[in-house]
Structures are given as structure tokens and as C-alpha cells.
Length: 150
Image (cartoon, rainbow, N blue to C red; front, top):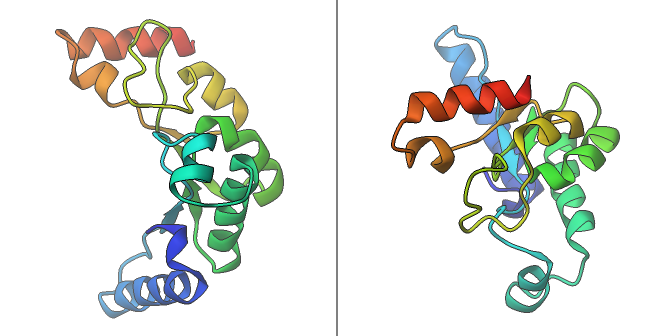
């Protein structure tokens, strides 16, 4: 879910998830909120989206909305992971797309980091799509990324 839907929608989504899981007697899935797409940069946030906050402050605000409404975590750029980890705590999941190994093309990603740096910054989960899926040898690309992480 996207944090921009606001507190009421975030609370309603979390409640529906809990109720739905209880109705079928299953564990409650973890709901996470998107802070800001990693393909957007500070300039786009200000001039295209007309958001007057600095990008790190905006991402933090969106993550705190998710935390305050009981969501399990947030999707954020690895560049914001360290700040969100410090502000939201160790139990708050951080899923980081826009992760690119040094050898991969950045594509449309504006706020990216290497896999190793993203983990060091506090990411719990990395989303590394195109460097693997667009590779001529996806298995080798994945192995190379794992080797770089060490």
C-alpha cells in the first residue's frame, strides 16, 4: 500500500488484513507501505509532485505514518534506510528496491545503492530486479551479487 493514501486508509488496510487472517485462521501477513518510488529524485518531488519537503524528510514522514498505523514496515530507497532504521526501530521492516550492483546499469533508478551498502544502511530485504532478470545469465548475475555481498 502507498503511504500517501493517509492514516485512515493505512489503518483500514491493516485492520482488514488482521480480520481476514483471523477469519481463515492463518497468521497475519505483514503489510508494508511505499514511501516514495526510487525512480523519483528531490527535484521531481519538489517540481513535479509539488511536495515542499526535502526528500529524506518526506520519506521519513511516510514511513512514520506506516509505523503509527501498525504496519510492519516500509518500502524505501536504500539511501533513506539508515535514517528510517534509526527512527522506526529494528523491528520495522525495510524493503529496498533500486538496489544495483556496481557493474549494473542504473536504469531509471535515481536513489540507488549497491547491495552491500544497502544492507549496511539497514535494509532487511533487497529488490534487485533488472540486473538479474535482464542478464544473459540470470543465475550467474545472482551468484555475482551474492559474492559481492560476501
